Structure formats: C-alpha cells, structure tokens
Length: 495
Image (tube, rainbow, N blue to C red; front, side, top):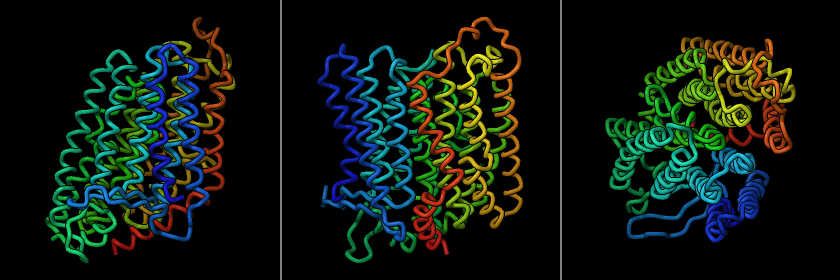
C-alpha cells in the first residue's frame, strides 16, 4: 500500500516502454502487452477503492519523498474521495479504449498504443499530485501524447485540430505557471517559514497569506487554465475540432478524462486555495456555465454530424458541472463531482457508438442514416440506453448528478437553477431527435441494408459501461459516500 499510487501511475508508462522494444510487425504481441498494461493498472487501482476509508476527509495512500529540497519540491502523491473516482474512471476508460482500438487502428499501432499508455500516466498523475511542481509536470506531459493521437491518427483536418488544442491549452498553462511561481514565492510554510510547492501546506496557509486583490489575480490565472480545459464558454472552440478529428478512442479519453482535469482543477486548487476570490467569482462563473448549458444544447440541435453533436453536448453537460461546483454548497458540489463521472461514462459511450457506425459506413452524417433499428437492433438498444442516461432519465446515472446540481444551485440562486433546468429539456430534444432520425423511419439507404450488428469486441466495450450507467443511477451511495467527506472539508474552508 505504501507505493500503490506510484505503481498505478507509472505501470502504464512501463508498458509503453516495453512496447518500444517490440518489432513493429508483431501486431498481436503489441495488442497483448498494451491490454495487459492497461488492465493490470485498472485491477490494481481497484485496491484504492476497496482500501479507501470512507469516514475520512483527509488524503489517503499518501507518498512523500524529498525531490529537490533546495526549492521546496517534493514527490508527493495522495487521493481523497474526489480524485479516487477520477483515477478509477481513467483506468477503466483506458482499458476500453485500448481494447476498443483493436481492429480499428490499422497504421502505426505500436506508436498509437505507446501514446495511449503514456497519456494514461499523465492523466493519473494530474489527479494524484499533491505538489504543485509535480502537478504542473503531469499537466504538461499529458499534452504530448494527446497531440499525436489527434495529429497522426485523426481525420482530414487533424493537424489544424491538434495545433489548436495544443496552443489553447498552452496559453492557459503559462498563466497557471506564473501563479504557481507566485504562490511559491509568497505562500510560505507558516511553521518553518520555508517556501514550498506542497499543496497541503499551501491550502492551510494561502487563504490567510494573500490579500483579497492578490487572491483574485491568482484565482483568475488558475481559472483561465482550467476553464480552457473544461472547456467553458467562450473558451470552447477548440473542443469540437479536436473531437471530430480525433480517432474514436481519442475522443473517448478526451471527453471522459481530459476535460475533467479542468473541473477537477477548480475544486482541487481554485476553491480551497483562494476561497474569498471563489466567492467573488461565483456570478461570473455561474453565468458562463449557464451560457454554456443553453448554448451547447442549442448548437447540438442543429448539427448534421453525429460526432460534432456529441462534442457540443459536452459543452452543455460540463456547464452543469461548473454550476454545481460554484454553488459552493455540499449538495451542488457533490453533484458536480458525481456528474464528472457520469459525463465520462455517458459521453464516452456515445463516442464509442458513433465510432461503431463510422467504421461500417465511413460517414457520421445524420442524413446518411435512418431505420438502423431494423438492421442493427442491439446497437439501437445500447444507443437508446446511453442517450437516455445522457439526458438525465431517472434510474440512469445522469439523473443523480443533475438532480444534486439543480438542488444545490436552487439553494444558492433560484434564477440560475431555473435557467439550468431548461438545459435538461433541450438535452432531451437534441438527443431524442437525433435518435429518431438515425434509428427509426424507413431503411431507405442501400448502404445501410448490409450493416452488421454489434460484434463481440464491441459488446465487451459496451457491457461494462452499461453496468456502471445503471449502477450509478439505481444505487449511487457507494460513490457518494466517498465523495462527500472531501467536499464537506472544502465547503468548510468557504465558511
């Protein structure tokens, strides 16, 4: 248990290094090594879930070693209930992405799997790092494999999408780096008087160390980096391009995990480090979140491309997450965290579903389909369940998060909650309308009459996701009980 987090983080990287020594032509061996590395990581990460003390709000499985002591830099890892679920989501989706890519990626498979495993290490590091210097390294490292996944294995405009993704993220990251350096120089350890990057020491000291004006600037610098990653309106324009051009597994990881780094950053860094500034920014963040909810839903309604529709729906759904986090009360914040997990499952499954018919038809245009439920009834059934979970049907995972978010928002601002509720209605419109146009009606396109239903590989991807979608909708208690103590601790800082 002493090194469990390090093992979980670096096991995928070890698998990626093993891939470097395999011949390019040994396709089967490359697949086996990649799957074993990702599957072992997921299995070991389950020990975090079962060994987690649900009664504690403190960070657990903490590892702390001196790294560059002259500069107060430590190799420090730890998780609470918030990061625990995001770690599990990352390891779970990576297994499905690696396995789901079998037979889909035809070229440069070795490099592709290397990027997937390298990316997993970066993402896990972001959720576990408790030293700001270490966090920033993982935050930046993760950009490299994602850039190549989009730029090498993406669609026709992949270079444009990859460069846009990279530049947007780097702009925010530079400002965050400036804020981290300022924190290091001025947020000294209250006991020893030494400068430190230790997040736990800064959380105890930073709120008292900085005047309100300094807090505002520091919050803004961190918030810009995280808002771009979420992405919040109006920083969202890189997302549809990245999603549309990325390979299917790239879109799943992008929607399922990478976007959560932005929302995670707000609740892990912005709110506890700068609580006074967080309160001041509530109206601005909430209004931008509401614009994202309504705008993302309305733009989704007019999309002709299935993948672009799902991409814009992410802008809407993550607006809900931000609204919940900045209700600054336990109900809304717990709802925001659980909705991160729900969005990763539902939107990840939607991207997989779009990928299934793209592999068969090489088209994502809604107009090219119709009547698929007759030809692919099992596919249509899975699609219906996932679409209903995405729109928040009671009994499926999306409802739990949206209900708690609206409950928390209503307590803090009733007008915001009423506007946000319209997003639920709009989601039902664009998702059900899309489903009707693709799955029902006459099967009048010759190209669709020979389409095959879900195969075994695709079932093995969808069944685990469907189980979690139903489990979180029917019995979310095991997840909520792990999130709540950490959220209550953050909420107490705001008092």
